[in-house]
Image (cartoon, rainbow, N blue to C red; front, top):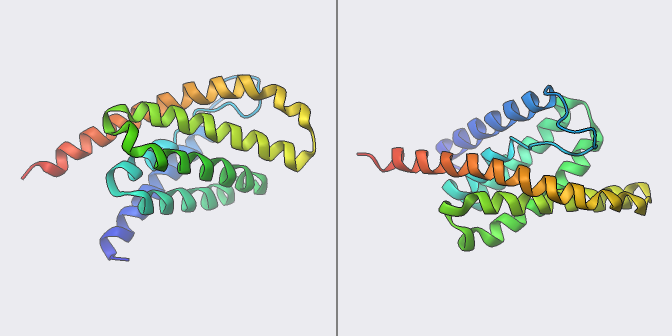
Length: 167
């Protein structure tokens, strides 16, 4: 790995961690557990679209590991890894379909898949199938939050793409 790529991934991971920690300290959006914006995902999406799947995966993996350490929550590691991997995989597979101009849609899909993955993980870990009753609420919140973070990533990619094309 080149020094430039390592530095870029380190800076992106740091930015994602800052957003993650800030979001941890924000009041809950709803009384329903598991509903949050996922602001750190804006960095992962931007990394995917600007520098490719490898760099995005490095940023995601480092952010999940360090975020679990910073939050002192080992369960966060499991749920974030499952949701993040499934979401990232979905975004990678549909990257060519959505493109940079519809990154908000990739974010919405990612949010939906992320919440579905975490919900299934919770059912498997706890052995409580009744958790699936949260499915519709988490699907809606995942779509909404994912579209929001995808829109932020879309404007970030657009801005950074313009700056990199200037002589």
